Image (tube, rainbow, N blue to C red; front, side, top):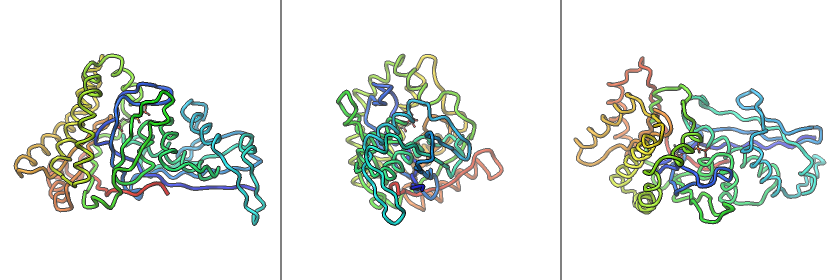
Length: 349
Ligand code: DP6
């Protein structure tokens, strides 16, 4: 017999950024962060996990190609879910697995991204969140999504925020074992449904400095990061939560853009400096800043992760249409920059 579970998890984009770990093994951050979960129809990972007595080892395939599960991050997620596995019984199919059996049984995992892994769009976030969610369902773990987020966090920090839809906060937590470093939902995807997200894929090349390496070097060398984590982010988190709850777009846009710019300033303050944005990214920022100023009140927010691609959040459909028109003027359809639009999404299913 084989028992199988399939799960689908959307990716998320941070509007207050996570950058820097205080514990690299448990993946504990130096500050709280807040993100938007995208609609799974657009950018998501689909993962099928299966268990059978005939499997002799844990194996995983990513986009059809087998990958090694020997890395600590995969092992941590598998171990943590196995420790929470519960009895299952399916009389119809003659399947009975006790809590103890799970220690000896092996799983096969097949995972697909519906977007190119190298496109510079947070694929590890959706990937680890989906893996943990699917394994938890397969092994009948009783933990809620926040508790599961603390396990997904050990695969990739940003993954913990993909367990929920809408706007999500990752509490950095205080305790040493990381049990309070988990995600909670701020509001669901219906709360601010008229926001439209446009992603300008400036380059689909794999980034030169991975987030993991980049943030390690920043923690080692940047004094600006310490100031950001202690003095700036705690206040910004409170203000951002208020802007979201009140659907105050002017304040939301101001905080989102300022936090993206400070994250990239912290990268520049790293020794040697890390450059994630390029000339095209800078042109997009200028275009949005100019337009927002000419309108008197912001219509669009921009944010850039560890790469040159722009994530643009428009106030509503009208602002999104106007933004697309402006961007198409700079980046016609035959240019290297591709423009795609998305809406806010629901949680893992
Ligand atoms: C810039 O979660 O990819 O996207 O925890 O080392 O796997 P690891 O890093 P990762 O870093 C994401 C950084 C970011 C900001 C964010 O998503 O908050």
